[in-house]
Amino acid sequence: MGARRQIFDVTADELQQFFKQVGKVWIYEELKFLDLEPDMMTGEFWGDKVQSLIDFCEENPKYHVISCSGRKIYNKYVPDAFSYHLADGNSDPGLFFDFESRLSIQELLQIGYTMFAPVIGKINSGDNR
Image (cartoon, rainbow, N blue to C red; front, top):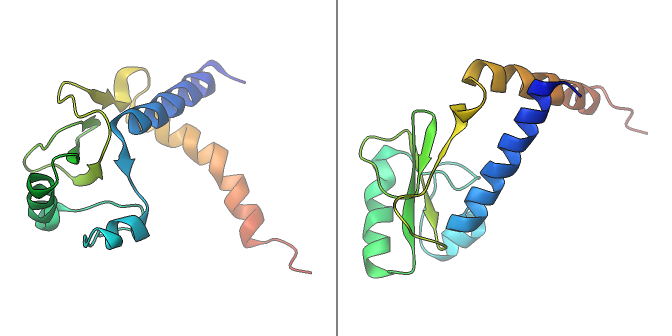
């Protein structure tokens, strides 16, 4: 395994740990049960729906908003971010995750592509006996 691949794996593990720590709520059915309507099946909310998350969190203080802005994920509401998530874990607003702390976005995409393209190719041309 190459050095960049190892860094990619560490970054992916750290991202997963960050999401666990802050309690990212990503299950679509759970969000629907809370009367929230995410834009994506993975629990993402885009800018036009962020107010519904803010209102929900004001009424339910055990929840908070996570913001994805640029190449960072913040454990707080950041205006004009790309996307938002609901969370119910550690709400420390000083926590954030930086995708480019070790690899550039281009490197992350290249390594991710080389890892997942063969798997997707196998699924698309699999033997359906």
